Length: 208
Image (cartoon, rainbow, N blue to C red; front, side, top):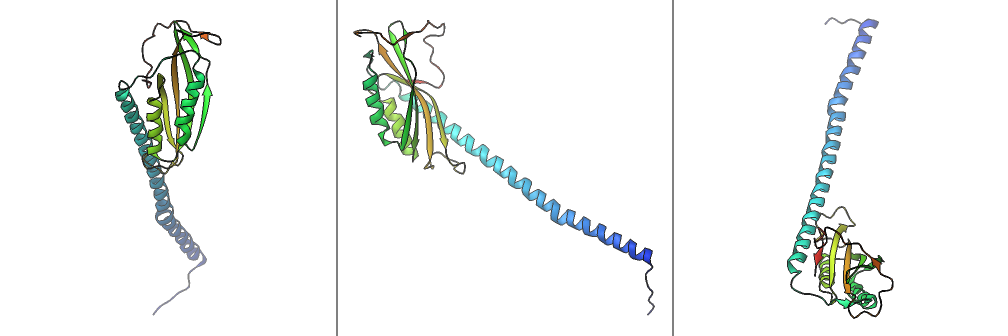
C-alpha cells in the first residue's frame, strides 16, 4: 500500500474545503431551519392576533345589533331638568355588579326643549355574562337614554373570545334625555345650535 505526505499547499486546500463544507452545513441545517421556525412562529402570532380582533369585532357588532333590536321594547321616562341626581343613583345601582367603574361627565346641552347629558362610562367585568347583564341594565334604565360608542377589550391578548374571558374592560357613552317642561330652572345648560343632521341617529348608538 502506497502512502505519501500531503504538501503544505494540499493541506491548506483541504482545510479550506473543510471550512467551506462546514459553513454550508451550518447555513443549511442550522441557520435556515432556525429562520424558518422563527418566521413560522411570527406568522402564527399574527394570525392569532387577527383571529382575536375579528372575534371581538364580530361579538361587538352582535351585541350592538341586539341592543338595536331591543331598543323599541322599553321607553324610559323623560324627566324634567335637572334629573342628574336620580340618573346617578340609577347608574350607581347598575354598576354595583362591576368589579370597578369610572364616570366622566360632559356639560348638559339644550336644543329646543330637549336636554342631552353625556356620561362616559368605563367598567371592568369578570365575565361575559356580567358584562352583558350590565349593558342590558343600562339599556333598561328607567330614564330615557341612548347607549353609544361601545368598546370591549380583553385585558389578556391570549383570549380569542370575549365570551370566555374573565378579564374584560368596557367603555361606552350613555346619553340621558331630559326636558325643560315643568322644569323650575335651566341654569347650567349650554344652548346647542340646531344641526342640519338633527334627528339622524349617530352610528353605533342605540336609543331606548
